[in-house]
Length: 231
Image 1 (cartoon, helix red, strand yellow):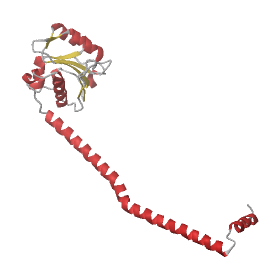
Image 2 (cartoon, helix red, strand yellow; image 1 turned 30 degrees about the horizontal axis):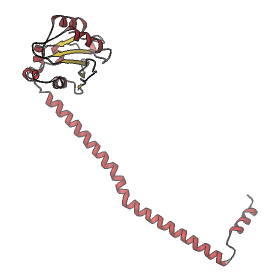
Image 3 (cartoon, helix red, strand yellow; image 1 turned 180 degrees about the horizontal axis):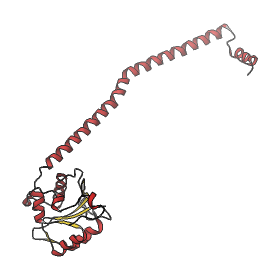
Image 4 (cartoon, one colour; image 1 turned 90 degrees about the vertical axis):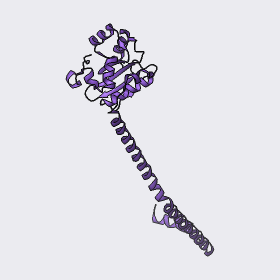
């Protein structure tokens, strides 16, 4: 745009009379006053709420840190408490299935698996407890709580063999009972690398405090590689 055209536009929109000039000045002053008042109001709002805007995330972050520390401390205390865990067979015999599975989970925590957890539920595909052991890898346990005189059959071993590694990626598969196993079940488990813990082994594990790996004569995963443990 040329200077001449710009000058013509400015003259066209400029107040022509004294009255128009006064009116324009009043409007400009009113707009300026409104802007000053709005800025002052914004300043008061910031002065009031800015500390809170800063403090709230800080408080929330501090709360999250405190909760994390409490959970971490609680987890350490639980592991330390379970490190001394001993369970009498008489106490195990009166447990229900869920309590038995939780007891096996706690025994795994005691033996160096702090993240061991109970899985047992409908459709668990023969996995009641899963644990990650620093020496033996991923341990999958099938729990069979029963009467003292009852025996676990080979059929259970077949089922565990079919799901432990393909489904649950087990390095060590174990069937645990407070009863006993049939001769065929023990032999089949030993032959196919499905470990078993019967009543006597459970007594040594739960009551006497024998370590899980020593109880089953497991070799560290770094030694045996991807193969199954000995039974």
